[in-house]
Length: 452
Image (cartoon, rainbow, N blue to C red; front, side, top):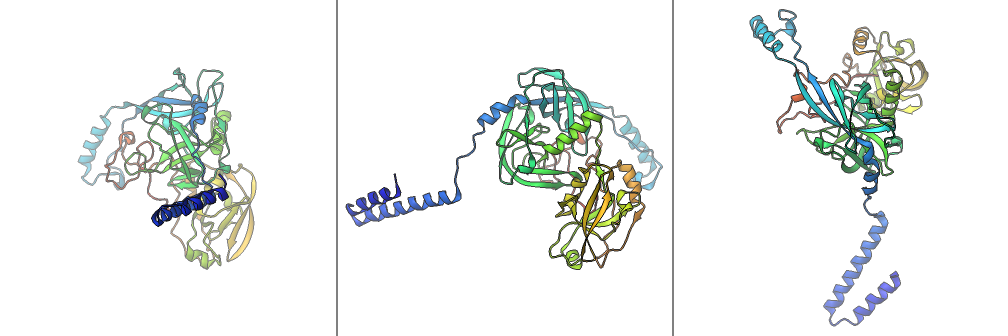
């Protein structure tokens, strides 16, 4: 019915109403109906997305992964060593503790997770923590076939692993582009939470490029999709049915889902996977600097209108930056033409840069913008980084207040978990300790210092 006909009908009813009360009611109803229609038109209300076809099409490419893991007995330091390693109760207690712990046997544990097929010849992607230290890995396909899987490679820093099973002509997922993803878009996860296979949950993208404690090289996609233990390694789809992330972690105070889920962007995961398949190892770019966030006070001191970028607090003695003109006190505002808005953005950008490539770094020094060319090196192992950090090249930077001496940031595989058997660690519901997806406590909020 047209708007004109609608108003004519209302006018006719009002004119012929039996009482003024009826007329008033009809008038109010008409106004409410019209205002509701206008409001709906203004906000562009549409029906909720239909996930049924997406789930039906992609469920055959999602797999359940179960593992048998060997939980090793605790490592005990010899008593009588450094005071930091010795118990305050004295050497007698150290001897007793060492004897007790070393007498504990190794034990087996089972783990559940998810994965998805990326190649019809049996190549499967999942999370590294799902299959790490596994003695045996079983992949259960959507048609209920079970296959023993071989580990092609895993990367703890990105929490990505690639498996191979003996199968052909498998249904595969389509790979999307996370760069096209917008905050507020609908997304869908398929996985095996608590072993319930092919479970689908939906939500929206809450944020992009999210940085988590100690996860320096992954710009996570944050969603409110319900993710629980067993979803790890499963795919996160957009409404086009394309995988845009690998579900990896949740942030929770109870060990269960609380509305904060994080996925590894699929473009990063696929690059890691390709390197694992080609060479069995992952190569990352490395700048060799320690950085921290730019505070409002620092920004004002540097003549910056707003706080942005990453402040270099230290140049490592044998890092790639030591062979350039970068100095402590410089603020990196762009790397290889990619804007750096905050400290957390720099490590992932550097890590994804090709080793041995020369890039331009945009900085602010003494209130002046500059460009410096740097040759990117290859990220060494953690021990080598620690040795480099002990020999800094500290150069004063303008009148910025000097930060504390920077320390190497822990890598993603160095969880802040002290108990030896982290697999069984649980916290009470009223604990303030956040938990990640597998029930292992995540670290405290990010330090102001980390390596780039």
